Every structure is written in structure tokens, then in C-alpha cells.
Image (cartoon, rainbow, N blue to C red; front, side, top):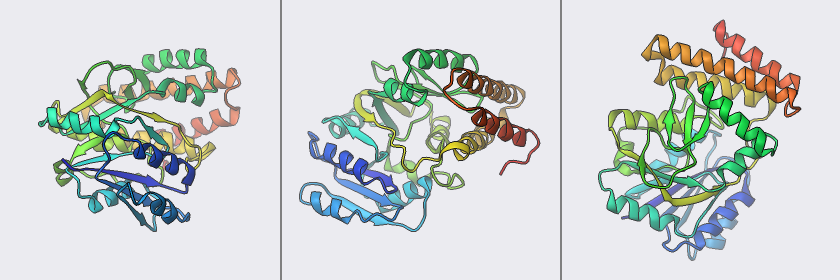
Amino acid sequence: MKVSFVIPTLNRVNELERLLQSFLYQTQKPDEIIIVEQGDEHLSTIGLKHHNTLPIHIYNVDFESLTKARNFGVEKSSGDIIGFLDDDIVLTKNYVENIKRFFSSHPGTLGVQGVITNFRQGHTKKVGGNPFVYSLYNVFAKFFLLNNSSDKNRLLWSGRNQYASKVNKIMNCEWLSGIGNYHRRVFDEFTFDEFLDGYALGEDKLFSYPISEKYQKSLCVDPEIQCEHHHAPLGRPQDKKWVEMKIYYTYYLWSKLFKKRGFFAYLAFFWASVGDLFIVFFSVILFQNTFKFLWWHIICYAKLLFGKHI
């Protein structure tokens, strides 16, 4: 079984170097590492440094799009299994070995992802670093059908998701995150949606959820496949651009996957949008965000309401 990894990157040389170091210490080496560099950094030195022990192929492209980079990497790959990684991931030493083990013992499964061992720490940091604030957010997020930590990967009718951060056994799921690994035959039928440009929030759900819809119980989470995610700030949209992407790309995902389900899907999206505004307002009260941040949310949701969004 040949395993290829596709790693889109954008000027994150230090993060990419750290990821490649974690490949060096794998109990089983990957068969192919495809780096799709979308920026202006010269990464050939990284490839030269590791080329004696790691099968690295670097491609410099003239676009900045996560979805295009992933589709491009798939075209260049030759593995029976194709895995995706963000460049700010760090792998445990048996990451590749456990992926091979999983597909060998589950030949009918189309895709699997592992677990992010520092998920709670990373997402606590996103809300200011206070564990109590994060726990409170997670309670409100579940109530308002927003993104929340759970024991399963499940998409909600609001267009938001539950993320399997608390898993202790192999289980089926509805979608795979950006660390998903797929049988090559998946790509004969499915591709990443290139309408989502740039950072492309939600591209993993738009890609993987239709797979689980068509092929029931074909996607899994395996807690033995482990890594860390360090959420590098470089390359991520900031401030107003982040708010616009979060709201408009979520609406696009909801429109593609759930709008067809009618009244209750509309109600779920509306309820989640109200909840998002409530949580942002609450974060302003707790001095985690500014009133300008809340105002950007209000403007974006108003544009959605009146059909004026991009």
C-alpha cells in the first residue's frame, strides 16, 4: 500500500520544516510527500536537506487557493492512499504506520482521519486563552447549533459542525477535517470546491460530506492516528476579512449541502446566526473582542439577509 501526503503551504517555512522533521521520525516513512507552495519563499533548500530520507516533491504554483492546491496535489500524487496535512501540523511517530494499518484492516472504508491531541488547548487560545471562557463557549455553541467540540464528526443543518475531539475508539463519521486520508478511487468522483478561494474555510466539509451522503458509513475517525495542530497565524485572514470569510463561506456551505432540506434547515441557519451574534457580543463584554468586531458581524449578516453578499 503506497501512501502519499499532499501539503499546501504559503510562506510558512518554519512550520513546514517542523512538519517534515516529524516525518523523519516516523516508524514507517511515507511513500510520497507533495508540497504545493503558493507563495514566494524558496523551499527547495528544505527539499534538498531531507531528500536523502524523505521522498519530497515541491511544486511552485501561481495561485493562492487551498482547494486548488489540494486538487493539484492529488493530480501529481501516485499513492493508493492520499492524505492531506496543513503545514502547521506535527505528527506522532506512528502516524503513517497507523494510517496503513487502518486501511489494511478496513478495506471497505473510503476515508479516515485521526485526532488532534492539543485540540482543546488550540481552541482555548482562539478565545483568549481562558479555559473557562472556552468551556462556556462550547455550551452556547451546542445550544445555538454552532461549531463545537464533541465525540463525533457531524454536520448540523445550520451548516456548522461538531468536531470529534473526544474519541476513544474507531467510529463512523459524516465528514473529515483537513487531516483526512482517502482511497485514491474517491478522487475519480469527488474534488475540492474551487469556488472557495484563498484560505477556503469549510473546504474539508464540502469535500467529504457528499462522500458520506452517497456512501454510508464510508468515513471514520481513528484515535490511534494522532497529531498536533499549532494554528500558525501567518496566511490566515485577519479582522474584517476573517469575519467575511467565516460568514459567507459558511452560508455557501449551507446553501450547497442543506438549503435543499427546506424550512427546518432555514430555521437552523437563522438560529445559528443569531447565536453567533450573541456569542460575539458576549466576547465583547468579556473584553475578548472589540465593538468593531461585532459591527463587522452585523454588517455581514445584514448583507446575507438582503442578498448583497459577495
